[in-house]
Image 1 (tube, rainbow, N blue to C red):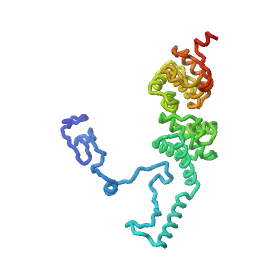
Image 2 (image 1 turned 30 degrees about the vertical axis):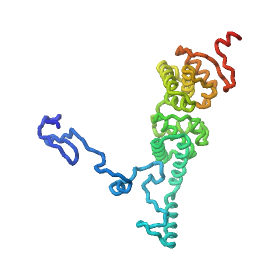
Image 3 (image 1 turned 90 degrees about the vertical axis):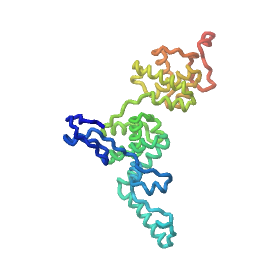
Image 4 (image 1 turned 45 degrees about the vertical axis):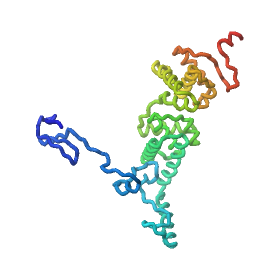
Length: 321
């Protein structure tokens, strides 16, 4: 422990064991705060944990009642495990039914009920992790509190909120993917997204195309070497300012396409385009730009427009022609 106070150089220092603090009793400075937030007890099974736990589960914004409401079970037994009589059972059933009805008693609750269900569905379709679902649910509740959902489709607002949260957390999902999962047009989602970012003053960063590479290589069945090569190629392009004004998915797809050629794990442009959700023309244009501007030496350079049956035109075959 420190011998003197760093503020007044006093030696009148004491440690409060209850609070875990080291305090100077002359100037009142607290210059050490070592509070242990861990549990002071341990358990070995669920029943023992329930006896010792002093709090419940945290709030869940993705649930209508935030996970803290009273639930009436329909098991037909009381707290001691004894069977209920038929009359009591019927009464408890009616109570549970009315309890469920009263939880969605106004338009706001109905809106949240529909929106949170839709949020879960889209997130499950796009394989979005649970923390981002909670973050998106909280952001949607803010839009409801500020009355920003008037005149807009619930599905459109949910998709826009989820898209913004994914971009903030560097777990990018494209507008095309959001449109496919939600059934709302890409144009409507983009318009709602721009409106929400302006009204809520969201600081959403530009999408880094590097974040798309692991997903593209995984879906194409490419190795980790290809993924690393694509990342290095794309990082060089970013450092030289070659991706300005270019769509991040198209640039990332072209980098993966080039890396696959370099590492001998060739994939057709059609295969890469289907995974990235862009056209083959976009991949060809980005491929030519990256190759020329970065001075890349790609063996068996070819323009493969079709599928596996398309003839591969190499430099040697061009000479023969």
